[in-house]
Image 1 (cartoon, rainbow, N blue to C red):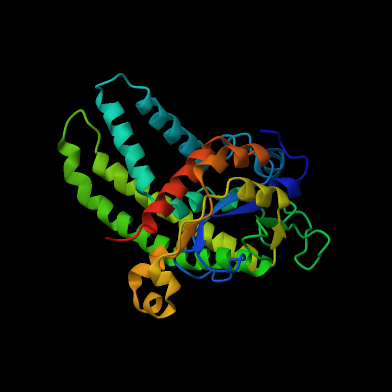
Image 2: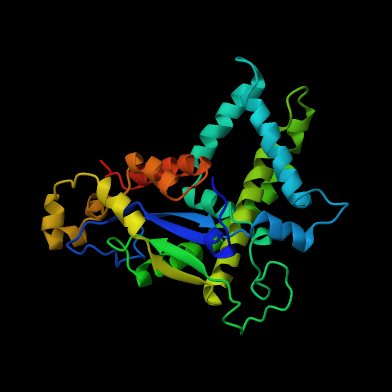
Length: 312
């Protein structure tokens, strides 16, 4: 991945609409609908060089203690996946990966936003030196890229704001719930050899919810202070046009407004997919995203298909 040359090119949010309600309009207006699903690629972190200049100390590990602990945990977990066949570590790794696939893709996207690595609200020059919130010339703007044929500038920002507003209380509750449950797993510590997996699972889920909760608060503050601005992306629009799925035939309920209004099932059936797996490689290449972003997008598409699948 080519490193961007300046701060503006690094900091961006990319909106990838996955589903929308099937209607004659080509622009997604009903951004608050539960089946209007969107995947967001958050890139709000400052360049590493500026972060090191701002807060690097000789006695601290590179990136800080929290970053060091996360890296250590990630490397340990990756080691589980390299264990020989039949080993309990490999079994735990595979089970854990299946659990990750079942976590809401919105949570996984939000937890990737680290407020400590991004610009602060009152010192947006990365070093916190003399930047005034009222100085518009020094104000860092984070672009929210969206496909203009599917979303509008207003709906793209409104949908992001609605997502954050919905997820914030959910992750706060999840953080507290798993933290309360964790002490009750203490009896499993008497089992020899195998670590207390239930305890580590509770801690991991609590930490995951906490990171998503803090990210929601941080993104809300950025939006409220006017640091996020919508920007159409013709390149993203071209990808959606090239890899657009074949339109499914309208259901009888969608052709009858009265029955569609009275039927809960028709709400799901009248949803169309906008993003397919075939488009993911082109997106990764066009926007120079990390390879891990492909897995996140595949997971989001699969979850969207499950959520909008008509119930029998």
